Image 1 (cartoon, rainbow, N blue to C red):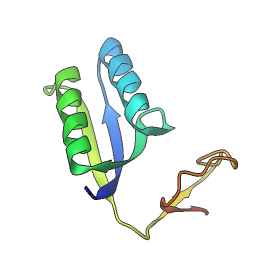
Image 2 (cartoon, one colour):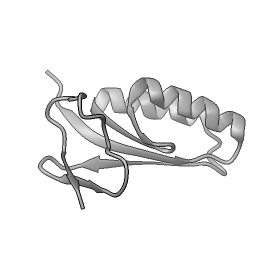
Image 3 (tube, rainbow, N blue to C red):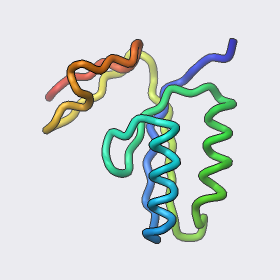
Amino acid sequence: MACEQQWLICYDIRQPARLAKIHRFLRQEALALQKSVFYARLTRRELDGIVAQLRQLMDEMVDDIRIFPLQAGQSIHWHGRPLLPECIDFGPAPDICDW
């Protein structure tokens, strides 16, 4: 069985039509944390497929998509609205701590 890793996917897309396509695509593949920040638990093969699709959707000359691995046992800290509604649990994910 393939091992899943936690990822943070962030983007800065220059053109509104491309932005909309990339945002719609990522909403199908990951959990939207903010307008341009997504969280996903993926195998390496799944991540490679997402990256291939993103490279087709983006303009690599002007757009910026960054994917950061999250280490197990790390906490997510935030200010403001809760990261997830209280009734949603996605199983083993990073601890969520309010500052």
